[in-house]
Length: 59
Image (cartoon, rainbow, N blue to C red; front, side, top):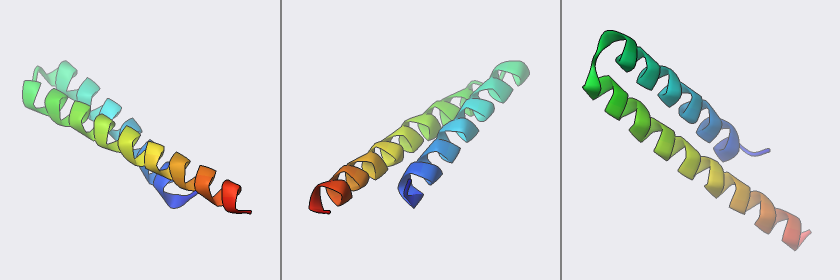
C-alpha cells in the first residue's frame, strides 16, 4: 500500500462520517461536502492503485 491509497481511504471514510453527520443535523451542505470528500478520496485511492500496478509491472 502506498500513501495515496491510505490517504484516499481515510478521506473516503471521513466523507462518509461527514455525510452522516449532515443527515443527523439536517445540513444538506455537510451532506454535500461529505459526498465530495468521498469522491476525492476514492479518486486518490484509485490513483494509488494505479501507482501500485505500475510499480509491480516495472519490477
